[in-house]
Image (cartoon, rainbow, N blue to C red; front, top):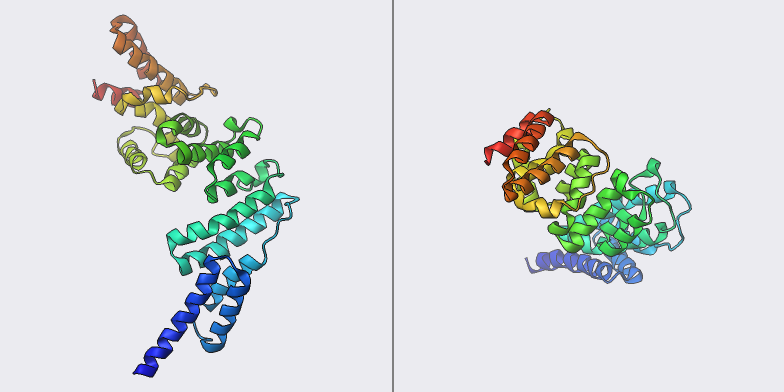
Length: 290
């Protein structure tokens, strides 16, 4: 029994030696410990995953990417091979911290690549986000011409604003993203995982009278003003630029809320009628709170 216990603890110690070297990001020590593990415990099921992480440390490059296809290939390796191995061996939270250096190195190699709509997810900005570098992500987006009118960069800078400054600061950009790209906005809410946002989204899905499609989410900012009028001041920073109905409805509700505070009943009746004509379901949601 004592011999069995020693044998069982031996593989744990050898495995931990590899993991310790990996956590220190010391590739030679990790490789040496891994070779000992494979010699003494060749059937250990962590051997392949450990090899992937060791190779990630050994194969670090600082060469700038010359095209988006090369960046896309490197992203696939990180996302589909290295990241799953790190999560399996370190656990979710520790893996995120370990992977940050990998994403940071990738972002640094991608800084010279311009935004390309054909590779809309392959740019330095999302790499900086994965690395937890919120300021660098924001700066990378701001170098993209007309970023406010392009779904991917707008989503990146919205997340950066949320991570760095919190939900109150992110509300205007969240509204703009909902108007511009509702499906991408929904995906961002899922990625962010903010409890209050998730609750509002569930309430919107349950209560808003629309088509039932994800495109309904472009009405989310306007609907918010019917259930959370206190958000009006925060959402007012959103830019109305596309002249679509959801934007117009949001603007109308700003005006309506202001008229209510001023007690201007005649003007209020007129604005309410305009809102009803624009979207009866939104008008009904507004009237439920009156």
